Image (tube, rainbow over all chains, first blue to last red):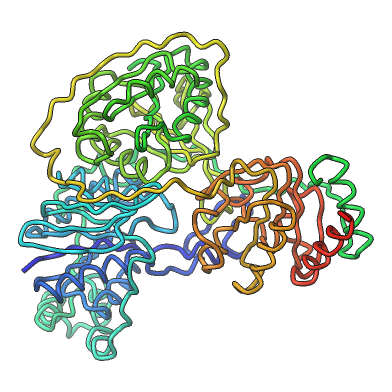
Length: 295
Length: 336
């Protein structure tokens, strides 16, 4: 029996930024961006599910984010997660990687009893690849980053293939360990239709509270209990639940500060327009030959 | 707290990584702005020559930590050594390559020492900053594109003793110091700890990369706009004819048109060839950051409003599948 905790993140779809997302002053209106499941984190979940299939155990997915991040936790259920946690608090807003890893490491300690922590190598909104190693450090456990494949697992070790600069290594680590996985390390399994039917109604505490608003016949405690019984509850943790040090959370706990943001202004550079004709291209080739670039 | 700038010297198979030497060149300028020393941190086995070599790129001093166990990079002992050094010496700035090794080590060190860390900077400079009404002299400005390249953010870490950043290979220019002084090497003894051995390397396979984009004087790069791997063949053909190297944008790499080691841009390689031909590349800031210092740039794109034209010297509006064959034909004809 080997238990895994998977760190997942809902990210703005930065690949599809359109004009509407940019404000006049050049800043980004995050709420206008479509939010998606960070792809590499799905691979991390796939790794955890494969470990479970081979060796038994439990898979728990956790995410820190706004309320709408419960969408990706439902998707974790659809793929096969046993339990999920939404870690959400206004006081977490503006967290950089250091503050994020502090909260996530405390959540992992709170859940406890784990052999693996899995995460995607990086999230597409920042591409920093920092939260994984920072969380491992705070948990005081080893890390295998940029992992491609798990080759073997014993009761207290894992052997994995990982990318290094200019090649690869096979590393063997004692458990527990934090592993970050590469994009092409596996294919995330499709959502199971049966699980989608079962878990599409999974709800977080706040979503249940919304149900009770305007319906005096529903009592939140009873509702939570009912959803827990049916395995449909998205566990919800706030700063108080975790008894965190507020000075280490959110903007306050983030040493990196955004000093200046500039929208990318195109310089209106003047260039030579070349017609894609034999004459046009010929003149360009002559020019580059004269400049000693060709020939 | 002092005014020291440190650079982690990555070594692979007993050789210093180029990115580390590039960072020394930048570190030299930062140290001069701060009136501080530039120190290289060299960890490995029989790597004293590397510590010596760092003087050629501007280092005043080197910390040398040698042991057979430290021959190849391992997260736990390397980060522990680093943490102990930083906690003892409190350098003002520490720079790491944004390589796989650097991205494994830097966050672990930043977490332990509670330092601010910014990944993939495209520029670094020292400036006095007023932040929220408070003056901070000589802060490190860590400049990087963010949010899909729609903005350029300047990040600062005003309150931490040590400011950390990672930078990709090729972003900073390699500058050899003329008549460098002999370096002062401080040897630090390695004291093993039980946790250093939690992870062991069972096998290690490395290969010198055959791709040398940085050393190529002509680069032909293709983007997602080519539409298919089939059409990407045209990029190879043009590069062959011109004697250049093939490269691609991140979108082309993500689409599987070309291998990641040939990616140009903020999260790839930065290049400065004599001629850069961008085909079907729209020109997001991340890509431009990796090629805009090229001597001459030709952009070929079917969209006349593509941002790539903004850094181009020569603009060709047209379909790549028509323009490239015509370019090759004309070039061959001229050559005769």
